Length: 367
Length: 146
Image 1 (cartoon, chains in turn orange, blue):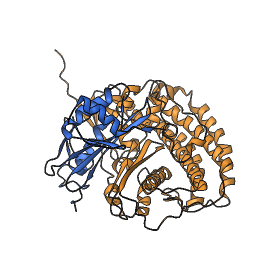
Image 2 (cartoon, rainbow over the protein chains, first blue to last red):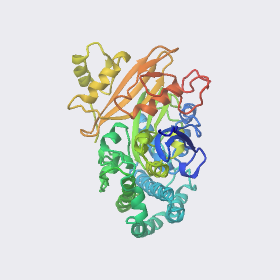
Image 3 (spheres, chains in turn blue, cyan):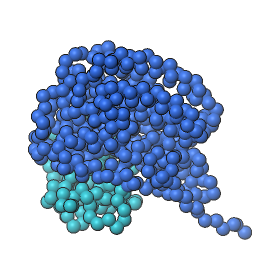
Image 4 (cartoon, rainbow over the protein chains, first blue to last red):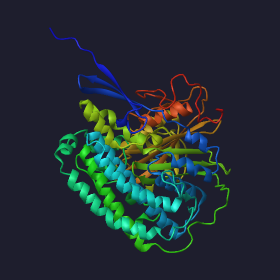
């Protein structure tokens, strides 16, 4: 006689270190094997899109800082691009270079957290994470120099950036760019061939190319599945068409590929920063923009390659001082679409690392 | 550079196959009737040469007398994009066909629009609120929500 069994429902989060914020999922288990999961959102919902409808175009910039709060510069960047597209504002050359330097530094900082947190989920509890934070700290110091802030920078403005680089910035950046490759190599030696990491991550949580495209995945998640798609190359914004860099891709789309792609991305970002430092001209850092911007009636969508993927802002203007509608395309939320297919059939411990390898920020999911 | 395909030219292709499905078309976008949305979307996805295999985003805008739902489609192969729109005039019970069966990426985004704008997507496998709790009154992104 067969033993009668029934599925077991396990609640993960919203307050749990493995859920990277206040994300919650309800997993249905058969023994230790995941049968199904249901992600539950909304614990950090602040209604940013509605708040934006009551603020001036400049007043929205601090709100964007608080979306994906570990890559605030990228959010500023995407939003400012959207307003500039809508209002037809041209950004001075020097500001373009400063923006690219900031965006790429921010990408490195975000990938350091992503990789560190992923290794945390794998069970390398907080040792690699603190190494990553040691490097991230240097980037945060650089950001503090230019903006006075360490997390929500509010640095970029419509038409440029809020202030020019201080004198000590470029030498400090040069030092960082020279030292950083050595640290990345060091981590690589420690971790790339680490047997535990390989056993835990190789072949786990495979997302095929077709699945990734169909589920609108973007960023490292899409590239790890073997799709050579980077908005900086495919649809260059700002001045990205002037830099040389490669698009790292994975082959199978497992957790290990997602981890590898992020490590490689850091090297490419450093390459871009080096080129930008060599080319940066002097001049103004902000275009002449009225205090209250009134873009003509119309709509615009601008997108950038943020550390999580395609971050876009869709703005509708009715010629008033506030947007009629401000929609944010959240890469973190959309990348989670395929999570259900990725975790089915894996064990609970794998569920944690598959979820960790997607790399989300709840501030951006819930908005 | 991603090429934004001309809405007019693609509208001509669509009309050949589905007459009376287009409301308006311009260089930037195509507006289709909500009843033909699913047919047109499937056509755009499966026609060789167009191959819109990637759904960038979905969003909705409340214009008081109607809702406008915006879809941005891309082809990663040909690197071109298109903005597809549809309108919903029923304020009490707005319904649109769900595109989850074509692009899985629509899943959470359609739920978000239902939650915040109140447009129901027929054929969606899990049509319920995504951010706000069950039992919340109203849809906050509507312009008449206070």
